[in-house]
Length: 197
Length: 282
Ligand code: FES
Ligand SMILES: [Fe+2]
Image (cartoon, rainbow over all chains, first blue to last red; front, top):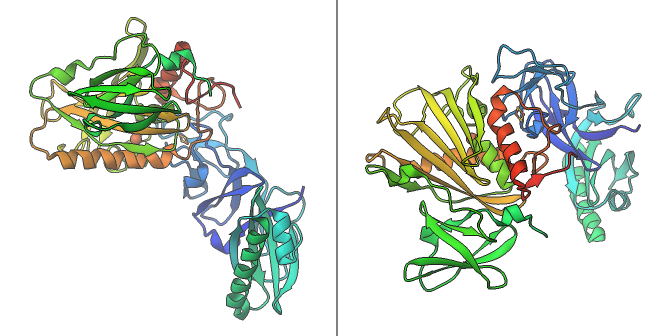
């Protein structure tokens, strides 16, 4: 199974939770107080609330609706409406493989995520076009690609979101290139969306 | 889209009375179908998409419509006629959620400390004590009784935190009524209802309405209080998956605190109510 980059690691500080989508599957990605990252199906087993709206307490993610708390393995640890109850093991969030490597957060793969040479995060941006159209406009391949954008070295990791939505996570070799690369990405986004329209 | 017979036979709120005026039609939507509301010589009337006249009744400051042939009269709220009470329609809130999810959320107290923090609940007072729930077969209604909960600011007029007593009643598929300790008169209840208009299976309009003993609080403050609460609920309701309410067990994990919700789902299923429900486990 291939890893998909879902966000820049710098965009998820300790204690944060965020929602993302890979090929139509909604995920809650969160970072515990100690810094470990986790990706779960974005749905609380209790009453279906999106876990990405939840709040992190230490090494647990709590659902915003009724405060059910889930440990890093996804198992429910605490039900505030019944504080003295030990939740049955069967109550658990659905855990997906998740890693932090090379300045990115990766989900859903096996083995090691791809090696990223460029250390500086530029930004993530969403393009309203299918991954093929994005790959054409950016000269990138599906997955990860190192390339030259207007003379500046960058790494682009493509995240297929839905049939007409793709996210791009960009990193670069030199911090001074960030502004120019960000503009170059905007120009190509417009081209990709024009192609797809 | 085909609508189940039981769904057609029920009463639904279609607009606040104040929105239906003489001399022109007020368009709205019920169960995905266009409805036009009129008022002639003070009397409200409605027609469906094919201009067929629909059954209408006007009560509790709202116009109620039955899209088919009503199988019963509109439920009664006896407190509404009690002298000394004040009826407070609280506006209309559009929500992108199943009408049934909106009702179920209204029946739920376990979320108060997390969603209505500092108003209807507060950590560490999160425990939900055992309470009584039953489906009343004679009335064909769901009732929950003997609920108590610690509330920091139970209503606009409450002074400080209170242990509040609650009862819930579901008299129609998209209506729920809450009876709540009345700070001014311990022997009486404040009555707070949510009249949910099913626009489609995944969109609705919530019309909160209350009747209480409170001559002092300005109307605008009472409406503002309820709007605050409902807007907090909306942030939840638009983010539940699946959007439609699963009626079959298996998809979600209820606990003892969810007994009202379990009874509500069972009662909907027994009535054959399908609009806004997910009937096959996904
Ligand atoms: S829906 Fe998550 S705790 Fe209730
Ligand atoms: Fe609420």
